[in-house]
Length: 297
Length: 331
Image 1 (cartoon, rainbow over the protein chains, first blue to last red):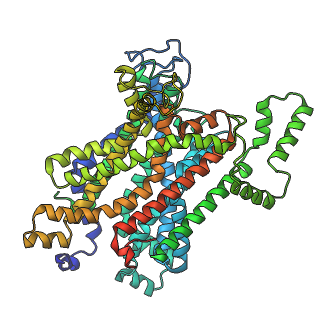
Image 2: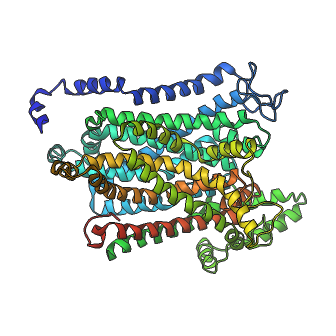
Image 3: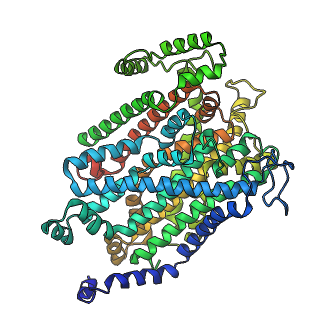
């Protein structure tokens, strides 16, 4: 409890100092820097690649089944489509699904978690029941049913449904955190001064677990990408455009494996693994930055 | 304890109810008209024929009845085990088609899930706080959990199946064989089973190892561990105590991961054309066989619920606090 003695010293300058300290540790954390670098690199490739390369990812070419070469960096498919062009476009879709799906799930998870944790009582009981139900239902199975009946499937709809089904564990975790914060003195003080529930949640509780919320979003981000790729692979991906999961599906459907066209199925899978793995590693790094207990190890 | 199981069963009951309701609602309230698309697919160009087909389907699905009546009919059919007739495997009933595929999925999933859980926990516990091992386990673990299941499956099938030629890459057994109880056939089954099993096992392994490692580190920092080491207890003993505490969240984690594991098994089966539920789903989607798809959905939900309940029972057996009615596990 040595930290208590420092309290008077931290007044106006405190938030800035905390931020500077976090930045100090963030820049020296190998996991965070490596993870973020990989994610940013792939994000840039996904954002700029389609602009620089041009061309449509699914356009049929004249040179089918070419191994990687100077002209086609990642080779071509059975239909002469350039795998690299598909890869950069697919990356873009993958990030879009991750951000949208993870974002929607994070927002729902936060709302449910905060309200259940802060309000308690009957509201908590009801929301907890809802959370448990959605938690138990296998997500992919629900998404299969919904997507199978959608005639035209877009990336946005896919992300929306992923977001709507993958929030429960986040809600649970945030509820538990809120529970431990709601009896603190500063929350009581805010309540005494007549602040509304919404204000207490957004001004008093959420800022005290902002690092936790951010990490939850990162995990949901990675999870959405993995679910979307499974969905694409089963054949319920977006009906237009390309994604890394769809590339894998095409490769599998047209027997790339049996034909030895490794350049068709290795890049998309490696792309997904790199994005999700880098996110997870960056998350561990963030944990170490925000949680001093973990720093020495 | 009665309260604990009562709550759990209530949640599972409600979940099943919600799942059935989703199953009933999705075809009826989604944008688009399944009947029009079915008529269109049949390619009936003659308007009179199209109209007859439309009337036939409407009556077949009972869509001319009021909504609540349709809903009750749906439940009634369900309790009679009537999931409809499969279009892909016409004229077999859906339940029969699914029951034929379930053993393959279970034979793949149960060993892969249990073994990866046991080995992963053991590995994670062993690696925690051992610098060199930890530095090796952690990156490998993260790469494995980040891998899409189908990608590792494709890599294994390509490397060990197509290139090395050691394992077959398609089917549950050789096409030249008929299922029977001879040793040859069982060996052949095992031969086909190895790669899908290995791929499921490996992807799941990483997550458990990382989870266990983190939990052990947390437990080793707790008061009772410090107290024990202050008393001069051997490290082995402290680690054993830490493990017993750390394994509890991992059991809960297993229940939470079931959905992901099922999804992984489905896509792995598709890669290997393994004749389980995954391949069935692929066939159902390719052939627009909605009855089959919906039946499979309910089976998966039911399976996950049963597995959840088994894990709850295991939890009570493992954690004495739940038995004593103390706040060990949250419902």
